Amino acid sequence: MSDFSAILKRQREFFASGRTIDVDFRVDSLKKMERWIRGHDGDIASALREDLNKPPFEAYATETGVVLDELRYTLRHVRGWCRPARMFTNVKTFPSSGARYPEPYGEALIMSPWNYPFMLTLTPLVAAVAAGNCAVVKPSAYSRASSAVIGRLCAEVFDAGHVTAVAGGREENAALLGERYDVILFTGSAAVGRTVMEAAAKHLTPVTLELGGKSPCVVDETADIRRAARRIAWGKFLNAGQTCVAPDYVLAHSSVKRRLTAEIAEATRSLYGEKPLENPDYPKIINEKHFRRLLGLMEGENAASGGGSDPARLRIEPTLLDGVRWDSPVMGEEIFGPILPILAYDDRDEAVRLLNARPKPLAAYIFTASRDAERYFLRNLSFGGGCVNDTVTHLSVPRLPFGGVGESGMGSYHGKAGFDTFTHYKSVLRKSRLIDIPLRYPPHGDAALKLLKRL
Image 1 (cartoon, rainbow, N blue to C red):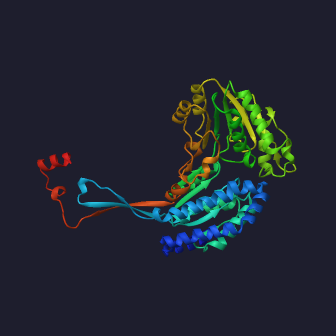
Image 2: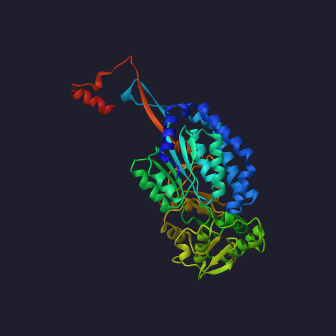
Image 3: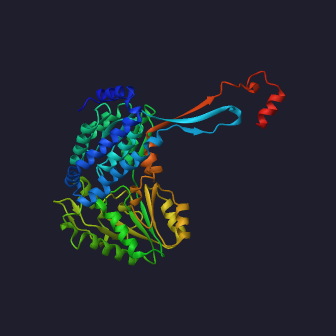
């Protein structure tokens, strides 16, 4: 196991040198990172194929390309983000001016999961570097090939005092969390998120938690059913369903549920073929533990489509479950696999009651042609982020902060929100030396109190 205390000591010394405060240094670091990624695109794709059997298009579209978009956007805007912002003061402090000065927290810990190992590690790292922090990066041990590539990137792009990648599993995670940081960003399960928050509380360290949950997909009676089905199938079965913002289940209006189920099944066949288990580009489940867990969730359920599996290659067919009860095991936890329960509702008030009775999800998706229905669902449902008439794609927009609420997390990042997550804004009031209004100084009479109240 690495000497984490020594790593953090070196990074604190690097931060104390003031190098990361220089905006040119930050920009240069991000440009080096961008060049490395472009020059090692093949290595990244090969690692993602090895870990999850992601095909090249999916690997670039959902991982490499997303990081490069984040880099481009950040490089265009980071100089403006780093400037002090003028703030208006009030008459009680006249004459004065105010400003907010962005400053880095210092030492950041970024802990990422295995399902999108490259994107979910490097997107927050872009934000941390742009904000002027040093960082310890801890990718998942489950995605070994991708974690090795991330380790190479950090070693070849950054000084070890600036950014260091740490390998290992649970033992290393526990040891890392025993150290003190200035800010932590964790992406993963709610159970581990609680452990991270408990460790951070010992040092009063600010935490951003990107968790998960059962993200619903509502399809009302006015929706374009065929198009909705194709977009739901794409968002759900991307990466074999191992996506934190994948539609976890569909809640369809009873008048369109049967047709929607058939259309999703047809869309799935068009995406992955009649025999998806034999499709060389169909992703696999990350390991046997999760493979067995997913098979257990399907036990006793009615598969309207799919249901097959290949234990040797850790693959499960895209599967639609019909007749699922709200108290079924598959509805009791985030599925995180290629299994999609489809339930029904009769009116939108009922749909909202059903959804709000569950923990707030990381994402929600609404398919409707009615602006009134759209407004109703957006006004009455609480969730981290989502789409109207699409799934998953909101993550690809740097201007849209990504984050959860309640059980699905706290805080957000992407674009400016990421810079803000790793930045402390120092508020400063600058008072004039030319005038000193005597009102605030004692002794105070009745006249002074009356004037203060008027002000």
